[in-house]
Amino acid sequence: MRYKRIAGSMAAIIIFSISVFAQAGFKSLFNGKDLSGWKQLNGKAKYSVVNGAIVGETVYGEPNAFLVTEKNYSDFIFEFEFKLDSFMNSGVQFRSLSTPDYMNGRVHGYQFEIDPSPRAWTGGIYDEARRDWLYPLDLNPGAKPAYKHGQWNKCRIECLGNTIRTFVNGKECAYLEDDVTPAGFIALQVHSIGKPEDAGKKIIWRNMRIQEGKFTPSPLSGTFVVNTLPNNLSDAEVKNGVRLLWDGKTTNGWRGAYKTSFPEKGWKIENSVLSVEPSGGAESKNGGDIVTEEMFGAFIFQFDFKLTNGANSGVKYFVTEKENNGGSAIGLEYQILDDAIHPDAKLGVVGNRTLASLYDLIPSLRENRARRKIGEWNRGMIVVHPDNRIEHWLNGWKVLEYQRGVPYYYALVARSKYANWENFGMAPQGRLLLQDHGDKVEFRSLKVQALK
Image (tube, rainbow, N blue to C red; front, side):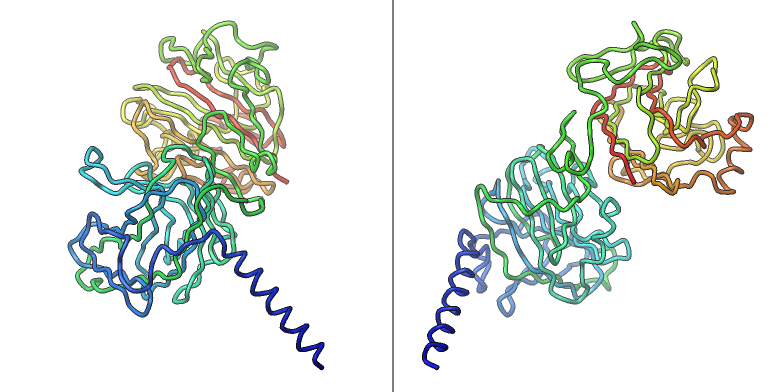
């Protein structure tokens, strides 16, 4: 009996020691008593300490408010719990900044989204007051149910170098590679409200702790990776099966449409950017379209592109080159266009020739927040699922979704400029194409991932 008591005591000591060891390196960001080590910026929402937790309370007529750590953090694991008493939007800033030269001190930077709405993007990464959405949870829909409304939610943010990962209740939500802000403060956001009756809504945070410096990241789980670093592949992307379709230096893997080699003129490679040289604004006889040497069926194709004033181009997929078309090769097209200037934006039907539309068939969502100024880089993405569902993405927003091969698809084709092309867009596999429409357009970060 005595032996069992000793053994039980030893086991308890071991378990306690393991627990203490697991906590080693973490320190609290909140003393449970007052707001020492924090300061408030921007809006005048109410922050108070109640029962060992920080309570944020909405105030009508005030902009977004932030309770900010006085210290900045670079590489870290930050863990916290939060609970909402309503369905208001909120967030936790990290690696964020407030400087006089940026919007008069407006807090800006990475935000761990708290979104109890039916959209369910809690754990997504938003770029507050800067680039908008970097990682919406539509990119990882399996993580949407992780948030539990009205309950305490355990959250984790890992920042190590350019790698940023978020977790809600043990589920990985977002994986971002980005180098815009390497260090900054952590902040608790109370969102502005538009109605007086929404005053007094609360969000509560507790058990906030941080471990600084180098650490062993959580194991990779196959989460989709958003990588904003030009022509870069992270280890996580490689594990997911993502690969570069352009090496940033040569023409390897590409050739001219209807040709056996890459065009001798009309395309330029400089500073790891592949660009169409301007030649008059029509489907060019200068260099012409270029296509991949490989064929693709179900896939994710990611590409960065930059427009010049009035420019027109496109990314086509399921290109077979069987048509021997005199102009651009035939295929389904993700439209790339300066909507404000180019006349094509006003042609077609209900805007189906505008930026990110399925050209001449389906218009893209008119989400202004997905648009970038001419001369800025855009992140485009085409997702073709094995069941022929297809998505167009623009700067983190899903702006279009359809399914080829179903009755409405054939009806759309029948009223389009492709009506006379037999089995238009229905090849089981095809090439990817970058269009030369005679205007200067730049491309980089061309990546593909096969889907099964």
